[in-house]
Length: 287
Image 1: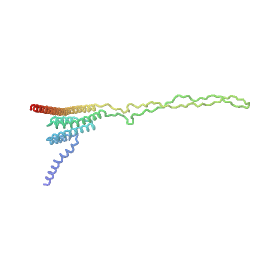
Image 2: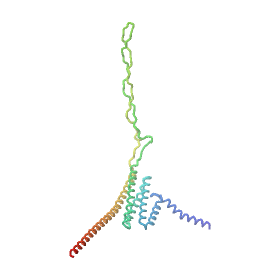
Image 3: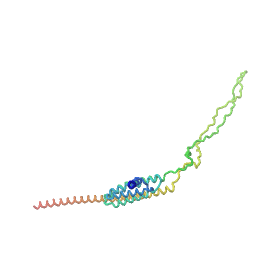
Image 4: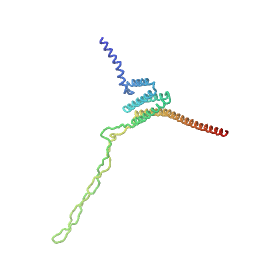
């Protein structure tokens, strides 16, 4: 009996503990993870529970868009993977559809304005990611010790004359008190050879110079996919902006119509008041 009870207890624990573990594990799952399907299923369940309230459902859709972009950003930054972009585009399409099918104009415009702000942020951040992909340097170098080295001067010798003896006459006194010229040799001080630096750079082997490799085919594909997603985001913003502008125009037309009606009523009241005064004046004159 005790063995049966233990098995039953373990079964209950596994039944309730396993889903909780999967929920927690899938919370940070990415599109290329096995538990990502669980994460999407949980989001759809939360959306279904919030469906009675259009505002709550709309806020969840906006949060899901932000989550899809965060996943996309993480994949692009860590692996230059585009697996998150289709999920981001799908989420944008679902949120746009929900806004278009809003139950009333006021709720539609309110959610559209909120989503436009979110999409503008997503578009700006996607541009940052695209620039990071296309400008990411790929250094190629055989030896790390060889980098760009400054040019060093090479000493060169200049041709200067060597010192030579020069004969000069020096007077010498003798006992006959005559000065006879004698030939003596003296050395004059000539400049010594100097070494002048020249600005000639040293040569570095070409295979040891660090260079930036051009963009790879994989990087080009990633940039293209990001650009397509940006175009989708821009088109969605334009469509939602059209809804907002249409509502603004309708409200402005309504205000103008109300002003015109008020002005017409005011003029009508003035005419009626004038007619009453004129009629009263004629009645007084007839009496």
